[in-house]
Length: 312
Image 1 (cartoon, rainbow, N blue to C red):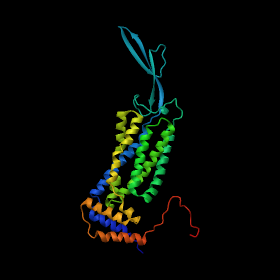
Image 2: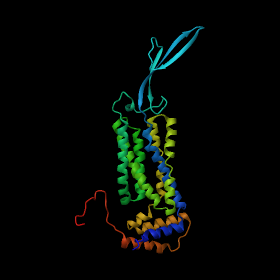
Image 3: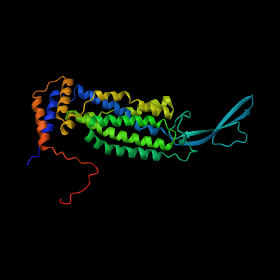
Image 4: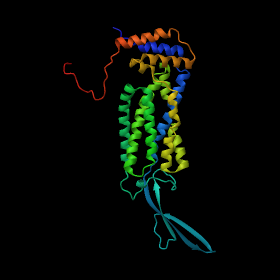
């Protein structure tokens, strides 16, 4: 017995085949989402620029030599009988210059600092974001979830640079992880559902994640201040929020939610953007509508529905 055929998906793939699997509209969505992923990756690696600081002492001793010459000897952590000058400075494990400005709780005299707590909370936020992102994408739509989580991500990053305490910093980084996890999941689904199957793997592999850390490192080299870097990296995503009006909701999601008029309108707008007519568009869309109404399972499940039917 052959497996059942998803006529709804088959008809939509036919529409993409005629209108363009990677047409003008798909390229627009890919460019918008890729730019947002650059900002997301930069924000995620922000805390990796916080080094482990260590107090060191450097002394300089002047020794007189014949011919009215002077010999300077510089030793690190050395002891001298009559040192001229000694200075203390903070060395770091990242090899950064001493003119960088870090939060006050990162210095050795403050024992409340722990990089592990920051990383654990951000990782916990990412896990929570991935879980909640799937539920929100299914219930509220791919586009709304993508942009709402991206706004949360950028806003939490800006708030990171406004607070002085370690607790507030950790809470903001948890919100950053939550927004990033939710955004990554929903945005990838948003892109995949408007692409033809031939382009899905290619586009996912070409997402420019590496660009974000590179731009963050360049910005950190110029700014050298943890507050300025946090605020500017968060504000970098503000212009991209306007692409909300350039990206349409997923037609597949609208059809599955029985919002057929909106799904047909979105599909026609995508076809018009690609400038390629689709023959028998109405009949193909009628097939998708009939398939959803007759065969689709409409019961909603969530992560809280782990009860097992005893009758089974």
